[in-house]
Structure formats: C-alpha cells, structure tokens
Image (cartoon, rainbow, N blue to C red; front, top):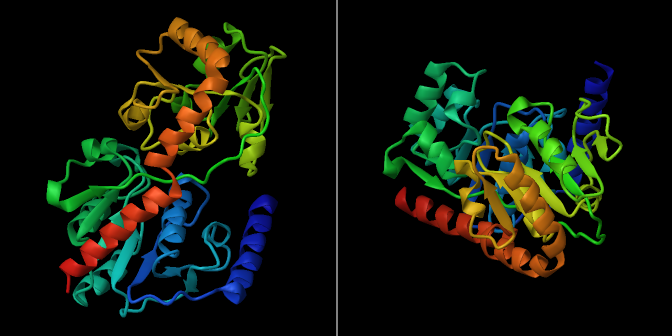
Length: 338
C-alpha cells in the first residue's frame, strides 16, 4: 500500500513537471490518445512509445491524470490533457477505454484506432461485450504482431500491423553469462527451463530479471528485482534466453537485438519476425539439449554476430523505422476520412 502511494505521488510530481516542460509541435495533424488502463504493464509502455514517436512528427494530445503510470512514460513533447476535445484529426483508444468517449468521437465523424497489445484469450479482466462493442465501433484496429490477428480473426480491411519499437541499448561490457528478462514469476515465461538449460551450458552465470521467486540455489543463478536501467540489465549477460510460451511481440527481444545480443527463443508465432536475424535461434518443443547447444554456440560467436544483429534491428525495429511506418499510416488514414 505504501509502495503504491509512493508510486502515485511520484507520478503526480512528474505530471505537473512535464506539463510545465511541454513543447508544442507545429503540425497540421493533431492526434488524441485515451486509455482506460493506466497501471504498470507492457501495454502502457508500448502505447507510450507509439505516442512519443508520433509526437516527433505530429501534435499529440494524451488524456491523462496525476498518478497515472503514463506520466513517467510520455515525453515532454506530448500534451497532457484531462478532457476530450473533438477537434483532433485521429483518435487512439486502448481496449479498456471508455466506450462512451469512443462513441462521441465516432458521432463527430472522427477516425478512430483501437490499439491492442494483448491476445483476446488473455484479456480476462474485460467483459466480452465490451470487447466486441469496442471492436465494432472503432474504424481500425492496430496490432503489434500477426499472432494477435490469429487470436482476434478480424476482416483484413479492419486491422493493420505495426510492431513495437525499442530504444537502442548501449552494451559496453562483455561477460560469459546468459540472461532471462521479463516478469519471470509468470509461469508462461518458462524461466525454469531457461535456468535448467543454462546450468547445463558453458555460461558462468544466469541473470534473472525480474523475479521474486527462487528458481535455483546454484550460486551461478543470480536473482534480480526489476531494474529500469536497461544498460545495467543487458550489460550483465551476453546471450538472451527467452523460452516464453505466449507473447504478442517480445519487446525484450527487440531491446536485446538493439544491443547486439544473440537470442535463444521459443518457436512461438510472436517470435517469427525475429527468425531471419543471424543472431536468433528458435527452439522447437522446449528441447533442452537444443537450448544448451544454442547457448554454447552464441557464447562463442557473440562478438562476430553483434554488427549483424544490430543491422537487423536497425532495419526492422529501430525507432526511426517504426516512426516512418506510423507517419505513413497516419497520413493514409486521415486522408481517407477527409
């Protein structure tokens, strides 16, 4: 309870500070974001990244309140607002947004995008009728990966896919370690298998970010709480092992690639966009011997693979690439509604 109060107090301070620092962008296209969920999770991080990227090109208004997790995620180039205005050119909503607000925007004839960052089967806290109504009212749905379309099964003209971007991580240290990154307390992250494979490999240490569980008493296994400093995380290891059983994109994978770190991944649909990278191996059916062999190979080849991995990241998932795709999409969708 005390932790939550501290979080909200810090968010509120950032809210007022960023309102003072706000630098308006002169643009002929104005965008508006409204989200129902403002807690700490991957969805807000991804949506804030999209809003920040768009704010480099367009005028972006984000409906937000003091205490929201978005306060710390959004750039000072995003205008904070606490009310709906109908003079914007394109409106973004998350799936948990207020449906009455979406209806008002639609009634005003404004184009709307529903940006979704999970799978339909995993949205347990949302009422099925609410989901169906939001999907029916919005003009278009934004997914970050094909796996979401496999879950939602929308008509082709209803959705488009633009993946998440990742800020480039500067890795400055070499080790002989592997790492597993994410909310590792979740069983779907499959961290226990990563630890088992790591202990069978030639690595010196296995760094687990972040977990409150004790996966092993072996001294090579280092357990960490979450760390906001990405460089600290990715400097602690040289090979990412991420055998998750369910993801929508894999932001941690994109971050690792930005740092030039090779990745040993589960062969799930969400990770297929990474398959063509020279420093990625996808593992079928949790084959632990294959995981161990891939770890050992990448520990040897990590330095020679680094420039190839970073080149792949720069051409597929860098902020510049994703911002350009969003700029084209916003221009396309706003022109359709004129």
